[in-house]
Structures are given as C-alpha cells and as structure tokens.
Amino acid sequence: MIGRSTALDQRREAAAEWVVRLAAPDLSEAEALDFDAWLAASDENLAAYDAALAVWLEFGANAEAVRRGLESRRSRPRAGLRAFHAAVGAVAAAAAAAALILPALGPASRAQTYATRAGEHRTVRLADGSRIDLNAATRLTVALRRGGRDVTLAEGEAGFDVAHDPARPFVIAAGDRQVRVVGTQFDVRRRAGQLSVSVARGAVEVVPLPGAPGEAFRLHPGQRLEHAEGAAQARIAPIAPAEALSWRSGRLVYRGEPLAQVVADLNAQFPRPIRIADPALAAEPISGVLVLDDEAAVVRRLALLVSAQAVPSGGGVILQRNGTPKR
Amino acid sequence: MPKPPPDPRDSGSASPPADPLVALYLARRETLLRFFAARTGSWAQAEDLAQELYLKLSERPSGREAENPGAFIYRIALNLMLDRARGAARTAAREAAWRALNRTQLGGEEIAEQAPADEAAASRQRLRRLIEAVAELPPQMQRAFRLHKLEGLSHAETARAMGLSVKSVEKHVSAALRNLSARLAE
Image 1: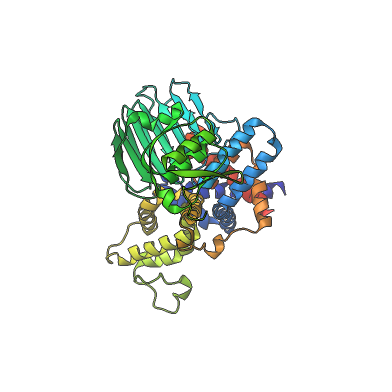
Image 2 (image 1 turned 90 degrees about the vertical axis):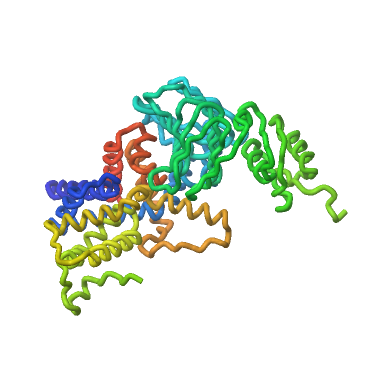
C-alpha cells in the first residue's frame, strides 16, 4: 500500500514539473520530446498530467478571484495594526488599477515591499546608497542582488536617486515597460494603466518587457516618456526637471493638464474624495502650482484657478462651475 | 479562410493523409494540445496553436522527409510559439486583470470576451477550496505560486521579486502545483 502511494506521489511530482516546465520560455526541443515520451509511457502518467494541468488551468481562469480571496483572508487576523491599514490602503488602490501587484507574503525573501496609503509620503534609503521617495498610494518591491538592483512598481509614483554602480544595473519594472537606469535622478509614475517616466539628471532607458509591443527609448534630462500600457507607442515630451519631482517637496506643478488629472492626483494625496460636477469642467486645462498643505486650503486654491466653487458633499467635496444657472 | 484541422476521429472515413508528418500530427494531436495548454495556460490558445501547427505542416512542400518526424513537429511547435511564448508565462491572470481594467475604463463600449466553457469561473464553494489550498502551502512555495500564477509574473520576474534563481522558482511553483493537485483531488 505504501509502495503504491509513493508511486502516485512520484507521478504527481513529475506531472507538476512538466506542467510548469512546459511554460518556461527556454524549453528545448529535447525536453519537449522527453515530455512526449513520458506522457505516452503509461495511462497513469497521462492521468496524473491531466489532473495537474486541470488544476493549473483552473487557477489561471480564477486567478483574480483566488488572489482577492487570499488577500482578504490574510488581512483579517491582523486587523488593528497600523502597518496593516497602510498596506491595505495601498492594496486597495492598487487593486482598483488592476494589473501587476506584488503582495507582501512574509519576511521569508530578500525582496522588500514598501507601500504608502493616500496622503502618505515615505522615503526609503537602500543599502546601496540609493534613495526612493514614494508618493501617496504607491506600492513597490525592491530586491538588491549581487548582480543587480530590481524594483517593481506595482502602482503609484516614486522618485529615484540612484547610486552609481555600473556592476549592478538598477532596473524598474512598471507594467509592460522596464526602466533601466544609468545612474541618475528621475521619476516613475504608474496609475490606472498610464505610465510616465521623467528624468531630472543622468539618463534612463525605457524598454518594453519581453512580449510587450513597442520600442526602447533613452531619455535625457528634461524629457518625459508617456505610455498607455498595452499600446505599442510612447510619446516623448519636454518637461522642467524640477517640476517632475516637485511632489517630493509637497508641491504639484501643472502646465495645461486637465482638471480631471489634477483631481486624480489630489485624491491620491488626501483621504476626502474630490469629484467634478461636469465633464466640461473636468477637461478644463490647469496651469499653476498647488502647495499640498491641508486639503481644504488646496481645494480652495484649486477652485480659484478654475473659477469653480467647492461644495461639501457626503464625505467629500464637489467642484462645480461658478454662477450655476439655477439660483 | 484556413480550414480547420480534421478531427482524428473522422480520419477513418476519408482517405488517410499522404504526408507522414500530417499523419503523425493527427495521431499526436491530443498530446500536442496538452503540450500547448500547459505552455499557454489556456485550452483556447492551445487549440489555436494546434491549428497553426497543422497548417504549417500541411503547407510544407511534400516529398522532403524529416529525419525524425517527432522532433521536427516539436521544433515547429516551439518556433511557432516563439512570439507567444514570450508572453505566455504571463498567464491568464494578467489577461483577466487587463480585461477587468478595460471594462471599467470603457464601460459598455468593450466587446465582451467570453471565456471558453472549460475555463469558466469556479463555483463559490470550489473557489473557497482553491483559496484554502493555496493558503495552506508552505511560505516560499506559496509566494512563488502566487506571484507566478495569480499575479501573472513570468518565471524570471518572480525570481527577481523573490531574489531567487529562475530554476528555484520553477521548483517552488511545481512543488506548489503537486501539492495543490494532490489536495484538490481528494
């Protein structure tokens, strides 16, 4: 009896290894033939493979639901811890934007995850001397290895001051692009499927991840790359370098961006949601500097910029045109 | 319009295919589908690839015998997948996330992409079992499985996030799958 269960275990092990190995990009022709032979060798092999494959595909088809289930399951017993609230805020923000989210699954690995919630800024100093400033509602993972420094920006915006170390390239994965750093100061932003990279000093390369469409760009100081994830093209626009990183000093600088974007940025900074009453107002271009002190003051200044009024509503604020026709 | 590959079960009624490669393909079609399904993470894509492979083989000038027909078929299968294989490890997880995102952004504009019947959403009860099974995996195994299969990172991206080699990630993920398929078969 023990012998039989061991044989079953071995078949399950081989089946699982094949399912995973077949998905590897470097699968060789010889391995494919080995798989073919192994599968044909016995009906038991075939049955074990089909069982493993079915589970694999089932998880693939239900990945999103299982992921959410695991997240809510994990968070329950820890409620009450402050760190937990910060993490959940960031996870919720990240989940709203979907795509690539790295969960913190425990202290086991050398990869470290940092997150900020709405309104929170955080500065992280890495062991190599680099510095990362996290804007609000941001989540990223850092792995420092002997041969390289890897950051995955799951969601949000971060400014980077990278310590020069040619032996250890600094690479940031954000959505379907990679930002390769050549020793420099720059800003990467990923919100709601929109990626932008702004360079203040030095040079960075923005490269499509393997399989993603589009070409690589090398950015120099004063340039910003804008890219919608999933699209092939990217746009390069001039920027004032200091402005790209202005949020680090508690200011937001705009030159003709629509009000909708300004409000989206503010909603990442403040807990009380701001809404815009009509689409025409949302499209209104904004130019100016917003100092991020307290929310009421910021909203008041913003209202002055667009000649709108801020009306308290529920837990938040609604921006609407001055001189509403009905009075 | 390319014609679909004939079902091997029908081949008895027609004259047997002249090309030995096509004949071998037909005999191995079920195995190739299983191969493609693991490689792409979906039966639908596996069917597409099996179809492409059939076309490649049948359009090939006849008369030139491959030395090892089995190896030749897999070589074409792997080449065929080169474009897709780059994105394949991204799995259905990321695709599903993108679809969800697009739907939110575009509202009613999006043409609904329906999952094939065998990839339909699990029942609530089944889902609970899937979640429990993952939650009970040992930490490293669980982390590798979640990053790769649920978050849709490639083996290389998972390795980077965990600070491990790609080989170790493959080991952790296959150990997780072995564990899960044993548990879920109970």
